[in-house]
Amino acid sequence: MNPIPVSIVLFYQFPNLLWMQKRQTPGALQGKMEFPGGKIEISKNESPLDAAIREVQEEVGVSVPKEALHFFKILPYRDSSSNKSILLYLFVASFKECLEQGMPPLPIVPLSQEWITIEPHQPKQFLLDGVIPTINHDVIWYFSQGMLV
Image 1: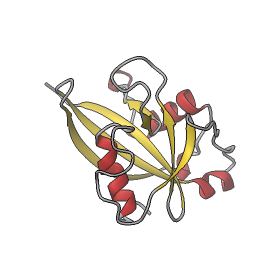
Image 2: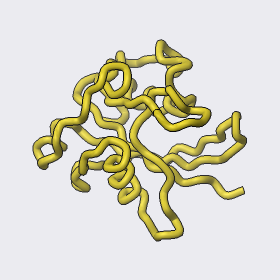
Image 3: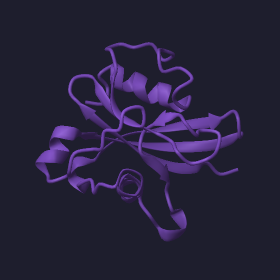
């Protein structure tokens, strides 16, 4: 089975804030805090960067400037609940840089959309265990190690 290509965007504020949102759509991840993102539309020749921009617009309702998104890494992942293989294209964006390039502020709705504090050198399993999808533990770990900024 071919892996499913997915782009996600981590909006951060230096030194230790990440913006996350609660998934509203029904399914295994409903109610989990996650980063904006979704499947890359390969059939439409969509690039990972274009998918990241589209997904932020669809999920968050803001247009993120292309120049503010920086590719970081591809993370392979196997979802044990569905046995699907995923290739996660990880983009990071400084919130300050986004604002400077004309993006409006990200929405803040307590318990739905908010800035999460990540302590430096956080272990992969930490306080958000059970609240976020498993793959996001790896993503947040990279951030807590200072590897994304």
